Length: 190
Figure 1 (cartoon, rainbow, N blue to C red):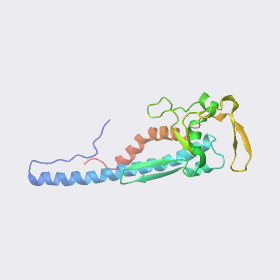
Figure 2 (cartoon, rainbow, N blue to C red):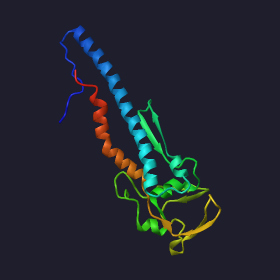
Figure 3 (tube, helix red, strand yellow):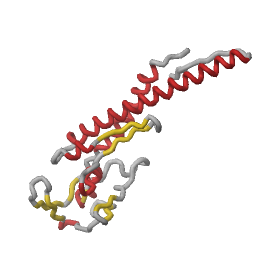
Figure 4 (cartoon, one colour):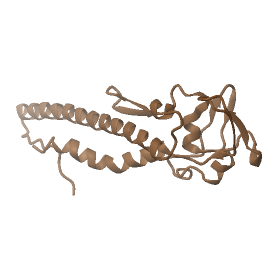
């Protein structure tokens, strides 16, 4: 069911048209303000759900990934940004999102094949570009890495995808219509 946000009635006279233009300009300002409120609200919600997803998917190691998730709303652009991984070494966030090694390849990111998502995007670290699950060709031999928190060494075949950002995207997609109805509902018709 569709409902008009605003109706502007006028007659074909200069004063009536001028009044309608003023009403339209005022409504345009109200609409932009409401749209910005919606995007800012969804950005804040997205940060919260992304942090919750990191925890729920068992992607917490030192807590650095969860702490790296932040959001920013630009009123000039009318756009919200949700980022993960700022300040983390080794492109850690993207490896958590898409998985790594032969284990990651065996349980790929759920968004691969969606029109909105593709194979793991290229990520570079110290001059190396990592663009596939097992980009270094470790295979069943796996590899050894040093754990930063305690300096110990660990062997791995990789890890499955923990798509915390993808699931955040899907969740925001599902609640956006309801949030929009709530945000624009207070504007009312006229």
